[in-house]
Amino acid sequence: MPQAKLAFEHITKVYIAARGSQPALAVQDFSLEVPENSFVCLLGPSGCGKSTLLNMAAGFVTPTSGAILVDGAPIAGAGADRGVIFQEYALFPWYTVLENVELGPRARSVPAGERRALGEHYLDMVGLLEHRHKYPKELSGGMKQRVAIARTLANDPSVILMDEPFGALDAQTRESLQDELLEIWESTRKTVLFVTHSIQEAVVLSDAIALLDAHPGRLIDVLHNDLARPRQRTAADVVELEKEIYGRRYAGAVTHALA
Image 1 (cartoon, rainbow, N blue to C red):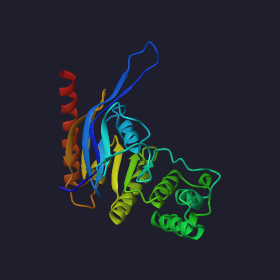
Image 2 (tube, one colour):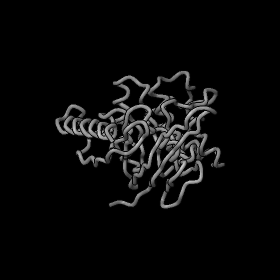
Image 3 (cartoon, rainbow, N blue to C red):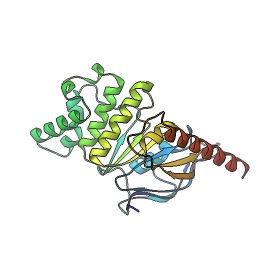
Image 4 (tube, one colour):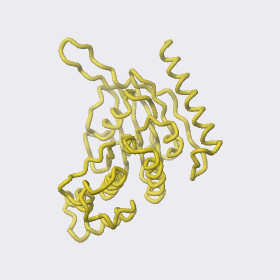
């Protein structure tokens, strides 16, 4: 079994509500190991704590109890070893595409020529090199998300955290970006933790799928996805795994409700 690059150890998160309201239990006793170089999906319905878990791994939110480790060391806030890609593109509109991608290297005082070469390399990787002098307003949604991916890669994090990055896109663009993301992952072999509520997306992308139940978020099961790559979305084995996941998720939710 590969070494755990990222590990959640008995994570619970309680949000303290306004005066007079009850505290909100968002995540309950969640444990998961994400092996190095793997692609793991957090799959669950809206409101089950997926984004909360991702934000805790990013260091933006502090767990109420438990620990999150990277390479065996507890995280203590945000760090350059973890890159985050959000559903919103979070590009600076006054910077060109290339300037947006260069932001991380610039913050690290990388010399201008070197950071330009880095930016162009990763824009070429996501198919946007010819658009490097455009501004975000000139790009489609899918192109903006490619810029966000290139910007994260230019920082060279060892872990990439992705929070439903394709959720706002149309189905055709979404599938195209899923395929492109897999090509990038296979060439870079970064460790990826990917949040989604789409069963098909999880099956197409992942090495393993962590199924979450809602209210509060808790782990139902972890399924190892050994289907051969590349995966055809309408192939019988893909559809069969989707059905199995749906059944497990439903069974888990019913068991929780009756407990």
